[in-house]
Amino acid sequence: MKEVCLPFTDLKDNEIAEVEIRISERKRVLKYRIESFALAPPEKKKPGTNEKINLLREMIKAYDPDWELIQILDSNEGSNYVQLLYRYKK
Amino acid sequence: MLRTEELTKVFRSDEVETIALNRVNLAVEQGEYVAVMGPSGCGKTTLLNILGLLDIPTNGKYWFDGQEVSQLSEVKRTRLRRGQIGFVFQSFNLIDELTIYHNVELPLLYMGVSASERRKRVSKVLEQVKITHRRKNFPQQLSGGQQQRVAIARAVISNPKIIFADEPTGNLDSVNGEEIMNLLSQLNSDGTTIVMVTHSPADADKAHRIIQLFDGHIVTENIRKAVKIS
Image (cartoon, rainbow over all chains, first blue to last red; front, side, top):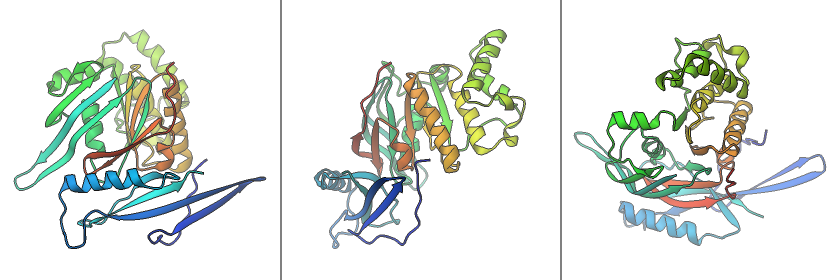
């Protein structure tokens, strides 16, 4: 089994969850981070789909290369924010 | 093996128009293992259904094994699916009234395979997924993990070129889920192309490439491993 589920309180933006696993003498540290990206300026309530997608693509492309995108999380209906789960590569 | 160009799917009801897929350009090579991820409602299953010839796009082109298939009739799509495509669904989709043996045998009956050949192939594939001892049981007598192994046996019985899996571990605990993922990885190592929709990052990790969908668009792709052509 390679999957470990750890229930913990919701991460706030830019907080890093660090998980340390020891198997016999081997230690592995996993770091996860959730980023919230605004898909439109606050004054603009409903961005167009293409505008939203282009912005998201640019944000993903420009993100710190030491972190890899793991998952785009479900967001609340009508929200202008999208949450992305990243894992530290090194 | 698969290629789409500007693939678009629009669902229309009386009042609402929903663009489930928006100009998706995608190519999958033979022997590749591709995971499709994204939040709920982003178009993952719609994409899988079109790629698996269960549905047709509203616009755009789709080439399956060199043939443009985007507007094929239901009859022609069914013919093309038989023997070329296998499906594995989250909810297993086994026929409750048939035994495990007969569930697995069913695709071969549709293909007109002889009785002796059917017996040989069903026995072999049941052994491959380690479920031979349950061949006389009905689906409801099996655990979720066992039912999914049967569903995989049914998917591979016709030696398909490609398997489409929609959340194959979604209804399973982690131990059974891991077993199913190992089976899919083994099939891919043996040369079967796999396209899998999943919410599980751990399952997606097994793939050569992860595609992230959002609002019907591919927003990014992440190549994780090189494809070994067998």
